[in-house]
View (cartoon, one colour):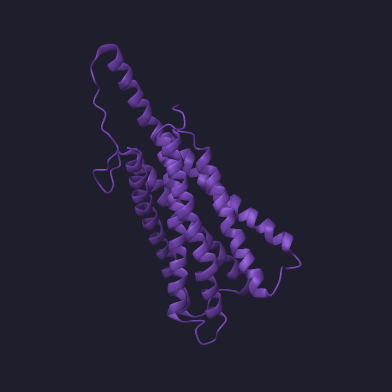
Length: 255
């Protein structure tokens, strides 16, 4: 494994930290408070504007997460340590949750008497997202590792025989998606994992609601639920292209 190359690694880390911190701050201190304010107003509670703002917040969040995924994949691809990517992801995710909690306290007029449980919840949800991050890491490491192993074997063959084995480069990207490209495959893993996580969260919430209040009696409610499930695929698509663009930015800077 190659050692961490200072300037290049630092640039990627700083880029990831700044992008994630800015997006999470905008969501926590601006977009989500506006959503809650409108939701509590009977005039706007069920308006299309609230739905749009909620989707904007969700899109911004997955874009921020995608940057950390790209940081992880670029480190795996270049044989660098991935500890920094894990630390950055965990720290910024916890910051996101703490910032949201702090704003909720401010809106309530003070720190909750049960503040310790709010902090525990922040840690819990951070741990859940970190688990998904690790799953993506484990799958991507195998895919990218096969390519790097082939590259090392080709290099050893060249050193012994002087003949260069044909190894198709995975970067720069030649297509939007290529199943034989380990980086693009890993980006797809990020997208699918995000879609499954988002869909699973919605299903869990709906099941809890049905258990508590029974099945919806209006057909329009079922329609909204189905549309909501299908729309989660949009987040997967956004993650894929966000990872793609972020990888291209990080690897291009590293050239």
